[in-house]
Image (cartoon, rainbow, N blue to C red; front, side, top):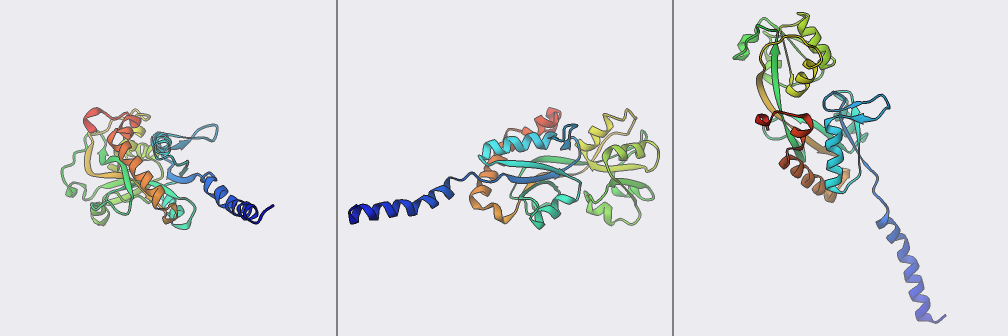
Length: 241
């Protein structure tokens, strides 16, 4: 073997590990979302399902990134993202500035509903009343700060609706889609729905995701939003889109 041939062979061998690393498939990004229907849940076979699970599959396809959705109890997802237990999180953001989400996939309405004769126009209407809310959730800072309103936590929207219909509290506050889902399974008579605020379903990412992947995810979110994918998956009426 000539000196020139030997040098070429060594150069080729030295490049092989770099090529292998570059060609290695990326590990799936772990995305957490709340384990509450209609957003996400676990079926009888231990598989995740729900609107945000289907949306995550479309996000993965549009971004070209493998994503594994993980439904978790409410309140655990932010901790997992901060502690390295996940790479991504889909969560509701009600801040006027959009918070720290890298993008959002759609909007939600924060509603209040009471029993059949309940009426609501302003926050003062709740003074002296008991309002139910999902444990650990803060959808209305003004309501939370008002000491004239009694608050009562529930662990699921189904439980909240049962407690409302049983007279345990006067009204309940929460995400409109979640309330409607629970009401559709209860059969009880309630008041009209009153919109307190509007929020967004934001996508949050750990810094380790990287700039390239973040840009791909942002572009995917924009496409999902423009196509009203979340509205379609939740079967929302067209006037709410």
